[in-house]
Length: 320
Image (cartoon, rainbow, N blue to C red; front, top):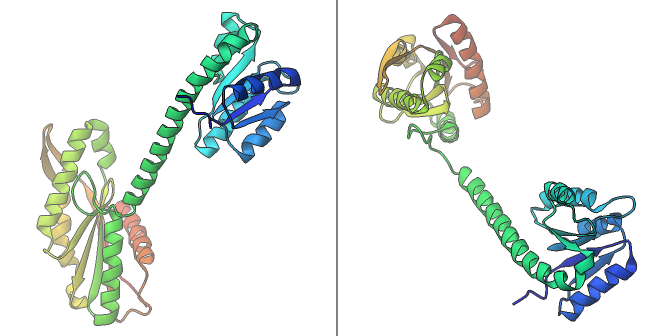
């Protein structure tokens, strides 16, 4: 059954032609019909209310049907909408029709056979417009759902350890704990210096094997309550809590650093060695004020740049 509430906009600079089309459609039971006498007026109408089917004359003054179709497509993109465009034409050459299809036109009605072609074309347009707009709506809902899920995504898919968001949440809690109950928050960044070279030489599945190996090694090198995360493709973070600042010595972090630096990981393509640089920031309870998560991340990242240049491990105690 035809959808008699189908929104149809008719655009023709010849009032007689547009009135005739509207009358034919009205007699067939269609109720949502609008008429514009030029492309500019039609576009203004579409700005106010979209239509499902646009019937427009190919040849119109100031802006023809093809140029209008281009602008309609731009409006469609902004509104996440699909408009089925039918051009009225006296052109029947293959070249002309090919040009129109390339410009985004869906169908034609030849003026010489208007009485026979109009309603069948509208029936087909109704089905296509409904399908396309249903898909657009579904895709938009899927996108919004994915964006919603992304807000709660806390796991690095490849390695199974936490991602940067997970680490930021954990650091926020740890900093507040340090501020309220004493102790020390420790943040260690580890950069795989030769990751770019490893990527150049190996396929994706091998990269994943190396990443998983690094994550597992770091978990084995740290304490059960320490937080190990992958904060970037080539960078890992370790968040830890110590009872006293005196426990945060270079030797305390050297074990982790040496457990990764110049160590090999077994993959399906053989053993791959990684080279690392690392930086550590420690924040004691007597630090006033306690820095924010962003400040700690930025400070440790800046320190890491120097560590990468020096090919070493650097340690910094946050100053008040």
